[in-house]
Length: 393
Image 1 (cartoon, rainbow, N blue to C red):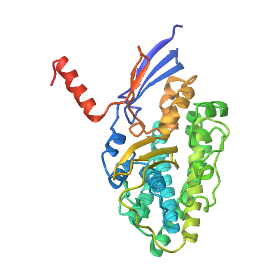
Image 2 (cartoon, rainbow, N blue to C red; image 1 turned 30 degrees about the vertical axis):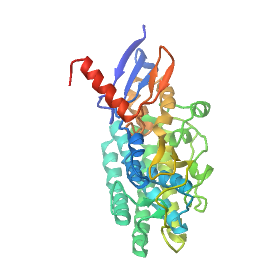
Image 3 (cartoon, rainbow, N blue to C red; image 1 turned 90 degrees about the horizontal axis):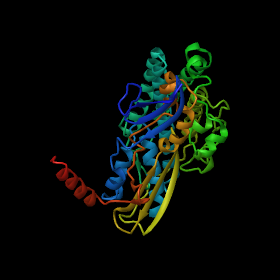
Image 4 (cartoon, rainbow, N blue to C red; image 1 turned 180 degrees about the vertical axis):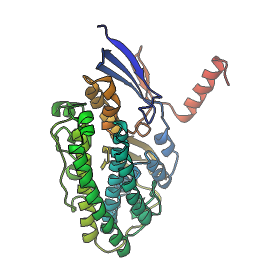
């Protein structure tokens, strides 16, 4: 049977955001996948370079609405290295608590979406109902349900009162029982096992070779986590286990995230019980000295990487972000090989993709092997010239 190519995306019912794949099929079996990115590029990096450090902080939070606090945590941890300041110990614990609440909300949201993809809408509604309790906690602590705006260079904006801590402990008790139930469903329900087990397998060697991150690589038995390997905030003081499963399939990635919810619950309890007293922020100068720094955090989807370069002004000279979804795209293409066409949505969903937060633009002339970067004004002039030549204004 000849190899057939079919496009999926950038608009497709199985895709929550625009991305295109060209699949090579041998009958109903996928034998190759070629991704096409760039449909949701927003230019946030370049925008941040034309804003102050404080304004760029809020831009970074809008890179991803689901793991927004991971972006601001990575931003402020990196910026604090540039400014040569350090957040107080209590602020570091608050960052851990908010980050782990955000991880729980992200994993519950993803579990509901995965359940919807396999036709298990009851589980979708259960997980999103419980996720509301996490969002209520985040709103109680930060004042917001999605974009929390709690992190600042030099600390955090809001403290956690004893009353808030008591409410959080009660919610953690409830969520622990619900999460254990979801784990039993994932392990025992025939819908999950038939749709997820032995689907989209990523071997440990491929996971390392293709530089997968987060639950995607931990679902292949590779024990790596930025919170342990390169601790930030107060993660060097809060004990936790790095969750791994050896099977490498979609079910293993599901169980990794469910167990990580249980770990996050225990981490929040520990942080609430051992949070030091004192201030929650320090004063920061308006301008940092010239220099550069990199920062890494473990976002819900995996390693999030930030680079900030200062030229001594109030604006970052260079601002660069590498998100976990971009890191997992090569591994995703490997996972898609050998599956049935009907399993494509499940395998794509198994990496918990966030397309808009990973899209970047790179200009390449293939004929000359040349790469280059345009300024905002150069891009504007090119676009005007292109529309003039093509008769459209």
